[in-house]
Image 1 (cartoon, rainbow, N blue to C red):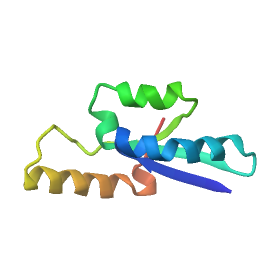
Image 2 (image 1 turned 135 degrees about the horizontal axis):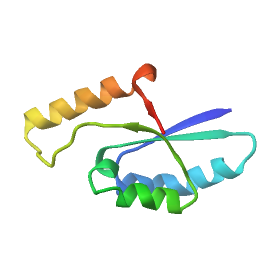
Image 3 (image 1 turned 180 degrees about the vertical axis):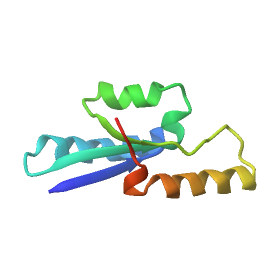
Image 4 (image 1 turned 60 degrees about the vertical axis):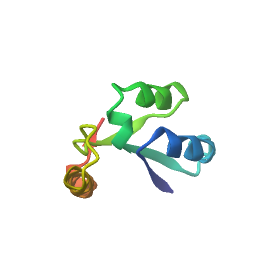
Length: 93
């Protein structure tokens, strides 16, 4: 069974990692991981942590986050995330 997990922050990765470890190690599942949000903002350090834990980012969804938290910037980022989650738009690594 194919499973796609989406992670956007170090905080949610910490919660997801134990479950994704089990899925990765179970031959009944094919795990793919899409990364977005904060993982793409911190110069890759949290993305590097995902890889160092034995996982692979299958997809990247760039939300265009620039550190601004104005309503306009957040609405733009959510729109980019929604558009980026469409299958043809996913950038496969």
